[in-house]
Length: 299
Image 1: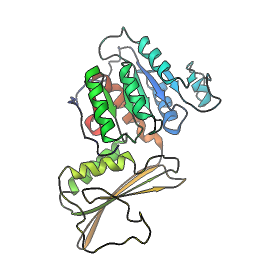
Image 2 (image 1 turned 90 degrees about the vertical axis):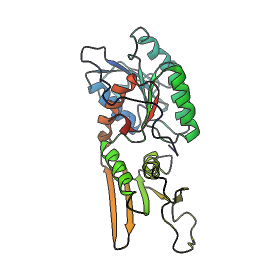
Image 3 (image 1 turned 120 degrees about the vertical axis):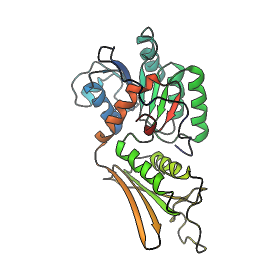
């Protein structure tokens, strides 16, 4: 997400998770056959307080197949569908009498080109969106926040569900007070569509909350290859993106000062690292009164 506000509504960190005696949380997963979506399906089906009620995916030849069988989990009696709004409508109707704070939840890991429409549709159907897909613009986030507020539907846009990444971002924001020179590098697999990543942008935004200017020029730079110095933000921070097979998700923030460098790095080795954050968010999102941005707002 680009230049997004860090919070769009108030939220109590002590908002309770679902009671063990409560009905399981009805969860729809969009992008269910993708790398992240498949992990979410596994995590949701393994969680005793959650119930998978919908699996949306547009992969060719998978319409109507059981999502559990497709992912090697055994039959889950949930058919894959490409009908996004139809699935949301069905999920919404299934829990419409459950009462306040008991609606269905959409977990979306799809594509930047459709994530705005997906989030808006979920809110319209009264389904709480948990958005892991990055690529939303500042204007889109503001529009979604207004729409969620008017609809009274809680939602969460989470650029990164890793607790370790949240800790890195907080450390980077703290270090930015003491260093005037810093650059950010993110590395992802070569099937990631957007660059730089929403996580990297979010890190830069947290550093920029100080309102300072980074990387004052000491020389007039010239690029013999356009773009080799990375993307330049108005604050002076530069963001670099790498895409290679074999990578999962990695980020580095390097600070420099006379005689020293200070480097913060986080490496995601397996996508299962994101699942505690996903489950925490879908358990809390139904208590929200509007849209929040960033996992740190829920910890």
